[in-house]
Length: 485
Image 1 (cartoon, one colour):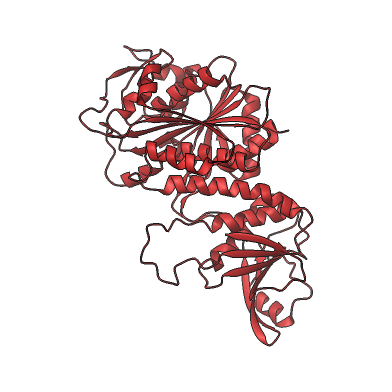
Image 2 (cartoon, helix red, strand yellow):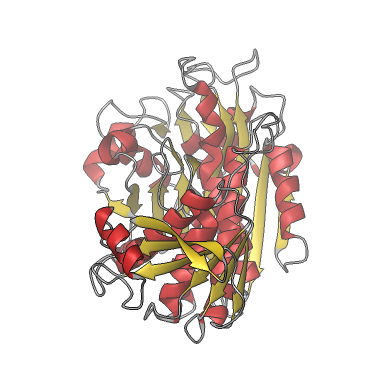
């Protein structure tokens, strides 16, 4: 989607849209248009749309109004995104190739205008690579948005938001690709290609390096697959001096459950079990594109969890890079085994002051929170409050869960230092307790269980059904508000 800016008086395309506050139709609107809007019960509520055909210099033009809700109401950014997303959803396959967005009478700030444009662009993302029989009516036609009369400063703000959009889109691409296309090695290669020339430093560990480092937990998950596991580290050093911040992502590029195999129904969805790694890769791209003033390391632990004759068995004991031992009770609780070695490695290699890990870790978090929030577990109240604020500002919402010794006891093993699952109840919490055992003293750490938010079966304001790109906007907002402040 191309977004360009033009003066308010410039020539306009056939389709022009304006933003309308609730109960605030433009005073200069034609009487017939006003009456038609009233008849259609258009009032300017957030996300509401109205369209009319109007005379235009001997021809006919399409005029659209998009509602942005009440000025000053809570959830302003969300309302603006609903308006922008609604316009794209309406006209993406309409046959129109260009939409003019007239902001001259909107009374928006530059930040608010950019929020609308971000939604316009994000809602347009689709992955049609493998769809060879789409009819003309099904194919996207809308390719360009021309913005007229934008508030002063909007173009500068949009440069930053466009970088975020690129990061979200890259995450969606990685999450959406099937597992025969994206696997550990190809995930690395695609990231290398996309990050080339950005200034990001890349380090890749293969099987030999991870074996030498003693990553027995991660390698135990990978041993049932013919695909070689990888650790991918991406460093954006936009600021020198302080200890870096690390974002660590679970990258199980396909999860059968291993020997503890999942039911066949719905297993195809497990291509997105690398959503945490996808979010980390997209975030690193966004930070580099906008040249963030921060020192950030993104680490992805990449494996396939498959059930061949060499696969890890329930009851096996593995030794992690940290030296701690794990009794593997359930091979489908593999994400924590991948993350624990990735966490140990990033701490030994880079000594970060703060770590945020993201993982599609448990089905239990979906039972708890549905698809509206990701779960947050944190050992530091300040970090928790910073991430919560970033979630509220970005729309990638979080809900904090407890950690504590009472839960920790539930993963003690009779034959090893710990087991990889606890009892049925509190499954998301015991998974977080497992990861906490690999966080060094003095390191601020948060674990985000994003299993319910990376893939959604219905469209939203800024996404089609499918991959959402959850996590990129959250982490970027955290970097802006905390690391760059």
